Amino acid sequence: MIAATGPSPFGCSIGVASDGSIGVTWADRSTNHVLFLRSTDAGVSYPGPAAQVNSGGLRHPGIDNVVTCGTGNRPTLNGNIRQLHQAWLAIDTTGGPNDGNIYVVFASDPADPTDQADVFFSRSTDNGANWSPMLQMGAGGGNTDQFEPFVAVAGNGDVAVAWYDRWNDAANNLNIDVYTAFSTDGGATFGGLVRVTDVSFGVPPLNPNLNPGAAQCYMGEYIAVAGGGGFYYLWGDNRNTITTTNFPAGRLDPDVFFEAIASPTNVAPTVSANDASGNEGAAIALSGSASDGDGDFLAFSWTVTPNAGVDAGATCTLTNADTLAPTVRCSDDSTYTIQLTVTGDPAGPVSDTATLTVSNVAPSVTVTSSPATIDEGDSYLLTATFSDPGWNDTYTGSVDWDVPGEAPEAAAATDSSAAGSIGSVLSFNVANLELLSVMMVHVVVVLSLVSAVAPKVAAGGYVHTVFYHLSMTVFASGLALVLAPFFAGAIFGDSQAVS
Image (tube, rainbow, N blue to C red; front, side):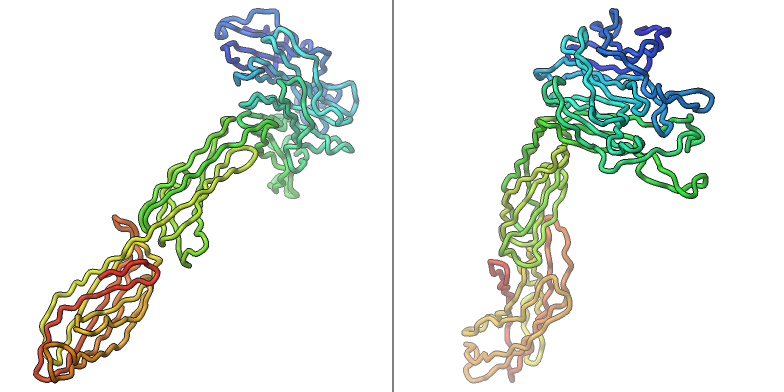
């Protein structure tokens, strides 16, 4: 037993120091003092006597405004918010210059008929043996209530105290905000007040309580603060209004709200994105690094943006973009800007950029039909397949029938991602064919896009495949031609020709 039942202890808090010692504090409602004990044997014993934290007299918060709440009388704040006398503790375990400092916060009712509660802070730098004079937090609020304080230590040793405050409703002392103040010198001094809430909120019906299952005058005005790279706040907030069967005209609804605020000496994360390179259509590994000196939990995201000069329609697809080692596939060769953004630090996101260089990959053409010998008047069907990992390229083709002295015949241009068909009638004179000395031969070639296969993921990346059917009819009396055609592709938007 740490405190006997007789002294009416309440509102206790506990913390563990870097050396393993345990500190406990509580409010003694028989005297209204805030007391402290320390254990150095893992909680087996707490040698006394308890140290008194408060340097001046304390009064139970709300004691000047006792209200009948259900079957008993309770000290309350304006709006019938019942109050309890309690204390909260935090210990610096950062290993910094203030490691081991103990901080305690509590509230007291001043001798004022309007102001029912003020918030105070005290610290110990000698393991709780001695305590600094009480420092009022939120001083200057006039005759308004400050209540339910909480204290926390950030990873860099900064200290934050937060509390509910009616500062912004001096006329009525009713509407509530959350305020905080920071110390960067181990609790020796504090800076100016910082408003945590962005909207003041009122008090819902408490006596009788809006919730039939809750005690009368109970609002649930608890508050909590955690320290990391900054400070993270959690509190009960009544800003929203709802309509219920019992309250058809609407009532304020208690909700839980959260906010993060950077500490005064917050250290922003360091972020680095690395240059990367690879081939179009292939998975290219990206990499980066990020760290936070305050120990904040960081989240990652990546973007890839085409630079000037990249062909219209070029796209990049990221995989595992919430890690530091994602992959990306791009539909066209060029240079892109990659950006790594880190969030999670209370001061906001931090980014770094690098360059992604995507190289062209030569397309491939494969003739799938076999050589053939045809008679005059017959037709020959030439089939071929075409693929390119860079699926944003635009292509045109030509057909060379290997006729001496004749240039390849150009085909109409098409994009591999297009559907439908194209066609052009090409004619050329083969009078200089060595096998013929006197005859003129007229050849008609028709090139049509039979089908365009939609993009798909293959083992080597993204591939578009286009099938071309070419038909040729030879008109020559008494002549048979041996055909060994091939399909030559000259690529628009790609740097290489293939055959």
